[in-house]
Figure: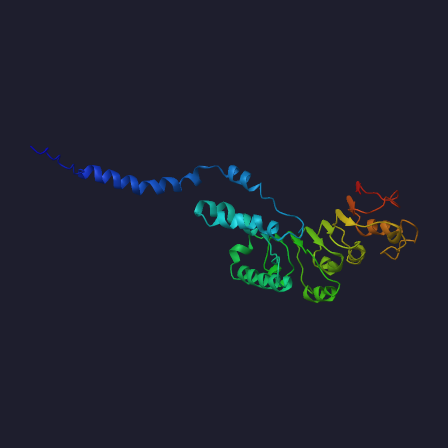
Length: 279
């Protein structure tokens, strides 16, 4: 006799409903994993992608943190509330490794600046700007730091004309090459000035000219025999070996920290009443 065929079991309606409900709830459960992690843990993960204070010339390093923040801010609403302000607290651009760097940097600057001007809610997050783009800077009420990575000698007059009449009272830190010294006049409340290129003599002259009395920290200034022979940027300081640096102190009476460049010499500093001198 042929074997009896076993009847195929038909799943009950309750079992089918249970399976369907499990399938629909599973993605929702995974979605909530992000919300269960504390904010401190997310910030600890982000600390492994530190913000670069100075551009080191490596394209992908400059934008690595930005890429991570952009991806996290677009994951879900919970992470967006955490990382969107972090993404836009620094407004950075960088040119590609190949091609005309000035063209790609200019196009990226224009595109991002127009985007911020059209999105006022993003402008309120921005507190650090890498490039100089005055129209965008004027729309950033919480701007604290201006960083110019590089400025050619021919850019001095261009920067002067572009920043003419602009004032950024909220700026506290300015990172500039010597040829971008005209930007200092737009920052009456600056407390920290860092020179990234050349000896900083033009920046010092700008500090003296505009009487930057709020300045507390001056970094990246070169010293040596050539600088010591320069006259003080202030007219009322008599010329002597250390008059150049004495003029700096006169122009910035609240100066507390003076950090010199890598190839500086410790000369002519005995008469300066500064809390910290770092060479």
